[in-house]
Image (cartoon, rainbow, N blue to C red):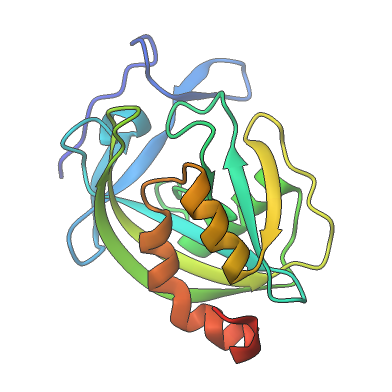
Length: 203
């Protein structure tokens, strides 16, 4: 089982605080090409070139008008800061289901409990991020859902939010930077998005 050593004292290692205040490295699940767990790796190490294939999730939430909730990632983010992306994305902790991780991060980042959250398939990709030099080698679990409450973004995670129609998304995507993975995950989720929002929404 391949395991990348994690050392909380190493510069650049991502970490969270444990209940006793000590820094603990954030660990991700490494997977094979079929999405089977084969080990763990520290978060930042997994994104160093050429990247280690790991489990991730991406969420697309829509309002009752069929508009997609976008977020602009906070400037303090170590990976892809300040760019626009889908509603929420991240990585399950080792042993955590993708669905539970998606619901957890939507609550943590946006202060929301989706009215509906449904699986929308998986997609595997390899996306280098030229700005940071990091690499997204991900086996990504997709989710679509509905939101009826007002988002309350965490400023440490999110710089800005916007609800957009397909036309407004196209205009924004042509004008400002988006995450390297955004179009890949959106295109993979489109069949579920159309089923959720209906043909009139235009997705």
